[in-house]
Length: 246
Image (tube, rainbow, N blue to C red; front, side):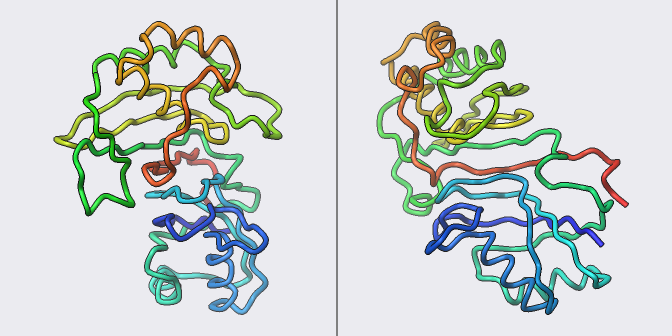
């Protein structure tokens, strides 16, 4: 039987989702906990590969098990997991359902604080200078006009295409917190952090809004802004078609 797990994690202690040699990852912790509880050789497949230090408010992973699992399973597995990883729900899905390839869209948020906040030091990026949020939103809208985002992709990557369909890209001010929301059918590695870094250059007056066209059309990573730190980034939502559920 194939199951989808819905989970969340605070990424500070981990080198991202995907297993790596000699580095603690979320996938490793999840697999080891499942194997301990189920006494089976479990492998989990995540919906995406968050980078080191990135958080997830919602992410899904699938795994196969011979055991029929009840909702009580969530309580049992959470007792084995560390405090910064939590399972939220469990779904029985069709045998060919895939956490990564069946996803229709993914949403991220990048959190910035414009004042020193000791409670957000590991959860948001502190920007001291005043930002022109209206201009940052004008520049963000330009993203929706394009599909190729090679200029925001990590240089060494094995993707076959740099095309992504961005459906939403906007900044929302909440007091001293500034949150960037973005939704797309897929994302390139480092893409959101590079986009935010570039939009910050607009907000700081170092780039004009219309220069976003030149940067995107260049398809050159060196033309875009520097990537912002990982600790402000959150994977927040993944959507799937109803047809995957059993």
